[in-house]
Amino acid sequence: MPFNIYMKKKDLDCLEIGNEGIYLDIIVSPNSSGDRINGVDKWRDRLKVHVKEKTENGKANNSVVNLLSSTFHVSSKKIGIVHGKRTRRKRVFIDVDDKEIDEIIQKILEVK
Image 1 (tube, one colour):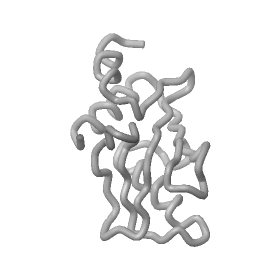
Image 2 (tube, rainbow, N blue to C red):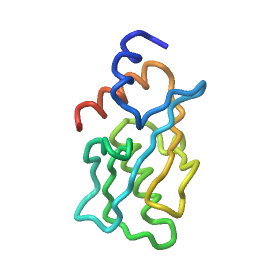
Image 3 (cartoon, helix red, strand yellow):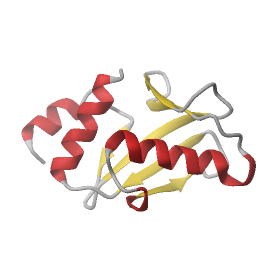
Image 4 (cartoon, rainbow, N blue to C red):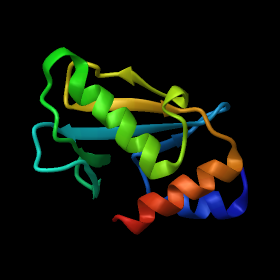
């Protein structure tokens, strides 16, 4: 793991770096006024994600994937919800390399 990634990651307990990419722990607020990432919830160690869609038929989950895809400039095919498909608390996997991980961490730090 590159040194700069490690130094930034230590402040982000919502992020775990794996062999093939990263895991993000998020908390979703469906039926919000707009789609946005609203920083990190320090109490829950989760990235706060707001989406307009309701939780019906997986619409909110699709919006979460689309929002993360557009925010982090990663194909939506590289993003998957690995835990919590039916709850507000989710674990998302993003299939990225070291360079992209650094960019994602930077974007998360910008919205803190």
